[in-house]
Image: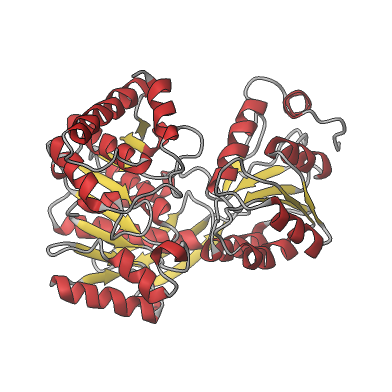
Length: 468
């Protein structure tokens, strides 16, 4: 199959979350038929509620700066499915994705015909097997793998990781992972295996006790980032919220590290990445302190406190020509993510602030709104084109609850209105779902690719009025 054909097939399998089938036997049988690509390289496996994608990107950036050829597997993608599979920072080419995904499909079909698996692999299982195979055939030194959902029954948990990383654990996907923090933590801590090095972010006491119990069961110890707050000192912050800090780790002092990713919460993620890098050094991987610092200072992770720019924009996304307001994307999709975004907006938002918001129906939307909406001057609610999207009636209820909120569909019309009502000195914040962020990001780059910002806004988004 060519790229479009395999893409059509994958999406025909149904929604990545709604149609997930958490039975490990099928993915294990599939990987065995592929001659176990997941065993061809050491793996750093990362689970958690928030921050696991940022930590994964930071670790891969550090490895690349140190000269290691690392694979990076993340989910979901924002615009292009090839974003999920990267080597040395480069996305898998479309032709290669089609080739590897088709091979997985053909082998799975053969297994199904021989009744060795009950059904064809799910969307996520298919992409996971393709990514693992690509990494093996391209000869990566290590692979940094982000867990899709949970941990215990996730397709990525077919691996025996060299390092298991647990970022902050909080409430999310309760219907799948369980109603309590202890239950959610147990699902995520299941990536810890005998012989694994464990690195964890600071956790709530009830979560930490679950991790400690799992480590005892597996006979391993763990490192906790920032176990002593006196080891961390925040040095400065930029106008757009990029922090500089110094940190005394188990091995040495890192002075004045200037993070590339905005947000105070990224300091914690960076400290987790530092602990992982030092744990790798303990296992013989050469990761000089300079590479660690440079990796953190150059990492890119789109869709997470990302300022969108067009030609003539400054580093924080504000137009030097004052044609468009600044646009900030953040995929906060649960309470922990919204808390971090709210803190960022209180400290660094421009005024007036227009918030463009949507979410999936299984999220705690009313609680998310209560934290975010009072921070905005205007709120535009919209609906994502996705089977999991929140129902219009629920969005209408929010619009009636908050007088400064308004429901506008579809997403392009919502973005058009946000640009029309937000003056150039203000900003638009887009949040609530990575799917919304991806849709807005794609529209923005189409809008600004080849024509001046004001004319692009008029032509592509159909603006009839525009603030000067």
